[in-house]
Structures are given as structure tokens and as C-alpha cells.
Length: 117
Image (tube, rainbow, N blue to C red):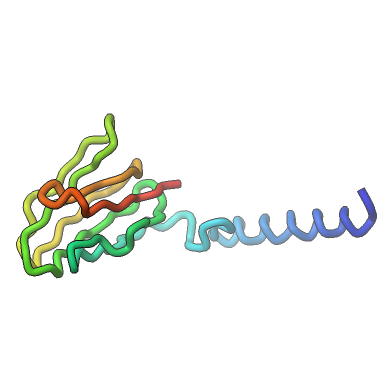
């Protein structure tokens, strides 16, 4: 490895160590230690965002801004969970330890995914 390559590697290691020390996850950007609540909006027969990246243990709130009833159900075997029925303007929150795909059981074309780290 050249002298320049060693300097670049060292500088990268210092930056990653500093970000970690400051409580930031360098790959995800948000604080690594604080639990957060994330919002998924249901409108126009779709979940938004389609892919949600969160830390394990964070909570997710689904808000039904659509004109009809929906629900949220995991579609991954071994990771079963389901919300109650959500009428327009209702919401439901759960703590997510393990991510995976989910669907509206009443409208199977409505799919999305939670990715946990």
C-alpha cells in the first residue's frame, strides 16, 4: 500500500470512530442510541414510504389518510403481526424489533417493507 493509501485509510478510520463516539451511526446517519418513532402514511391505496429503514426497537406509526379502511399485516413467515382495522384518519403504532415486508390484507397490491439494523 502506498503512503497516500495508508493516509486515506487512517483518515477514514478516524472519521468513523469520531462519528461513532458522537453517537451517530455513520452508515445510517441518525443517532444510534435514541429510539425514534417513524410515520408511514396510507393514502392513494399505497404506503409511503415504500421502504422504511429504522433501528431495531424503534416504533412505527401507520396513519390512514385514505378514504377507506385499511390494515397492516406482516407478510414474512415467522414474523407474524397485524394491526387492527384502521378507519380513515385512524392510526396504529407498534415497536419493530425485526423488519420485513408487509401488506394491507384487504388490498394485497398495497405492499411495503421495513428494514431494520
